[in-house]
Length: 461
Image 1 (tube, rainbow, N blue to C red):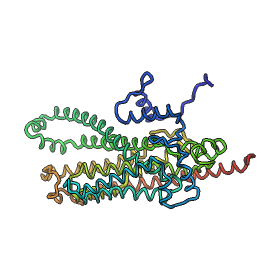
Image 2: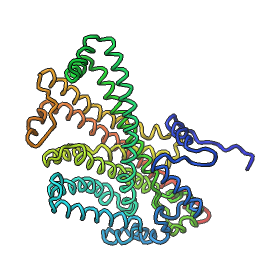
Image 3: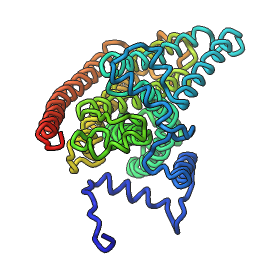
Image 4: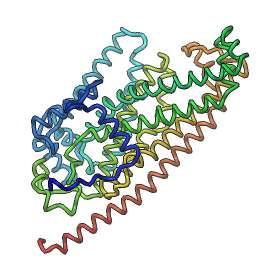
């Protein structure tokens, strides 16, 4: 009814904050564009307006209708065909272009590494790059191909992984730079007040700033711990978990279209289901829940893969030993996919179980706590190791090079406590996910059974 008030769904603080932020970019019927991601959003809105794609029945970018490629995917999943070649043959044009471009880039990089054009990127560096990709692909193989192959198509996995790699990582870098700059300005102001109250330290800054900064670190540990807390929980955890969540929301695939996971609405969605090439088949709620988990983990793996490449080839010194050690350290604790799996529990509660109390905040909060705690432990441990080095008088702020790698490497006995703590955090997070996931799976199976019982008792059967 036109005069009836539209009932708005319940929203938590984070959801309302995000809605307020998103509405600030709309004025007088126009959307403001301040960066590339805004342009992408505007392009999608224009495509939907011009093509009438409100129900998302075509692939964005290539405009390929789902009906052109999804029937073959549906056939593979219904008959549980595990042939890798058949799954590759059935992918969409968009996924095909993504895979071909990745292969082309790898070939170019391989030739570049053999040409000895850049001494910092040799064939050894190429092997490290392939190992970094292989680590993400191996986890993806386990999560999707081995355990949940028929809950989400290979085509969708390619799209979600690509979104995590190409879209969410740059977004996280931009947002982290903005928030980190703001936090640094606040820390600088607080440091100014501290210096104003400590005349001796202020004099030391005038004579020897480097030595005074070391003294500042030793004398005021609480300030540095608070700063590391902000970096761990706000700059890193909140930003990265939010971009991974919205990375999942950015991708629309026929596997997870609304209505394809509603067993009780089989009769009412036949036309829409057939429009995407799926016949009259509707996925079970349990299978859709597993598909959501695989999708969110795929986004996180793409994000983590790109982030690992940045840490190895951008932030680390150009040394094979440093590159390998960085890869091993970041591969040992797969926090990003674990946090994404934890997020998927909340998404399934909201979208499949119908619990409208689960807004953005409740969905990402457990992941933020795990991610933030993980980073905070490592940051605080690094701070105290630096303080101990200063007290021992061995801090020379030397940059790591192939000649002094052994001298720059911290004693394993100092790193062991923090490593054990983060290992315990990862085990705790994994245990939490397993317990919650199993309980949720039982609830989703019960929903499927109840729906099947209603269909059996229906007079239309």
